[in-house]
Length: 222
Image: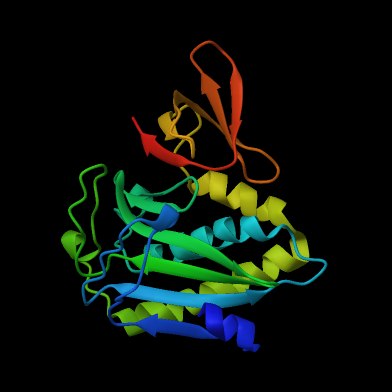
């Protein structure tokens, strides 16, 4: 998709893979991609009046949350929650993730969703829709997600980041949730979730009462 972005393709393009050989997660982590799951990417061509590009991760997250919720029974839908910076959880286990990559004035939004199977990871719980009795063909999921993303992208452009931020907070784990964070320099910080800054940075309240703002890192629920 990065090569296509540089070649000038339009931003309404979506690519979906049955499996990935060279996929990767955040910070270059190995990416496991068995058949039956959703692996898709789309392209956003940045305009001078657009909000900051990193906030597209939140836009993609709420579109993803909305899409997954459509395929879940009403009585379990509220077990979905968003986790900073780019994960969708079901009952605290990772169900889906998002990765942004920049190519000049374009952003590639990559999304992976455990529809049929989920990996067994040593550092976090994972799950799939199939594990909860939901059988969703990847091609059907792709169409629904593309529609949701287009709607939220339009709002991101016309209304700015703040409505996106408010919606993300509504769908995230509650304020006061205990978190541990691992910063890019490997520093670990424990604290309570206190919301998002206006630019999407995570606000963590440490045990000593200090308010710490995090712009990059991994977050785990305690």
